[in-house]
Length: 339
Image 1 (spheres, rainbow, N blue to C red):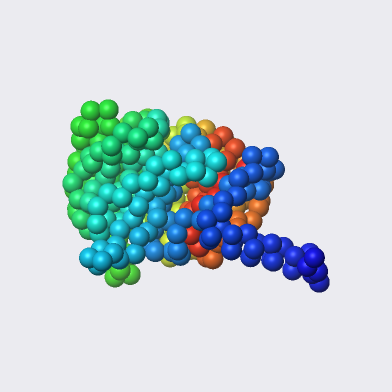
Image 2: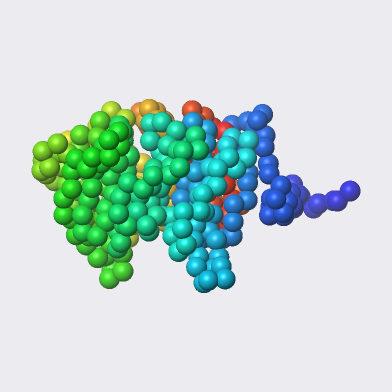
């Protein structure tokens, strides 16, 4: 029996032992997990490689597993579909030297995946993946999905596609602004009805584009720098925007006026963070400094907070069920927590 000088020492030892077993191929599955506890841990791969791709749909989680160079000197990403019981139900290696940058779930059991080779539609039922775009050369890694539509950027063009028939209903030119000489400012988000596309291609300005009419209907300007992620609330009234550089904050803007939401928390120093609204925008999850904080989106009361295991500095999150949040960490772990 091992003795410890304090409960903290015992906890550190337990976490270290758990991680050792996960790397050996064991998985953790706890269907009786309480709120704030993991119901699943699975080791995916090595450390952070530049993209922590994650998307959830009906309890399933899609993520990427980086493969090192093979005998031909080619490295690529393998796509994994993981069930609630931590089983890998699908594994897909698209081609050599093909890296996965972002993912989004559709309203059915399908995922949109952005590879260097283009946007693919990947079904959870085993249907062969379908490429729906040309290679996304020199693109920005945003991928938006809403109400049966998808949007992405490639070269100097933004596309909005209707997924039912593969028709590109909007294509327009937007050149990203280079921020700091190294980062391209280009991120968009589709409204809940997919009728409007919010677009930030220049720091300090967000434009709202009517998809059917292919025209900008309003522009909002503010004192923000580079935006790395945007998301609409389910009622279309609010736009969440994560700022990099500048004040490093999470903003909430009125989509009609561009004004900041009254009473919104500070959310400053938001480095190496991510956020996700649930399907009805009742709850907002924010991962920051090794913890996930859960807020009631109606009044922004913090209703829950819990630590994330097997994390070095950064992770991405996604809602994967009514009361489940999944996390892909830079330590190579895929986890699901009960909320």
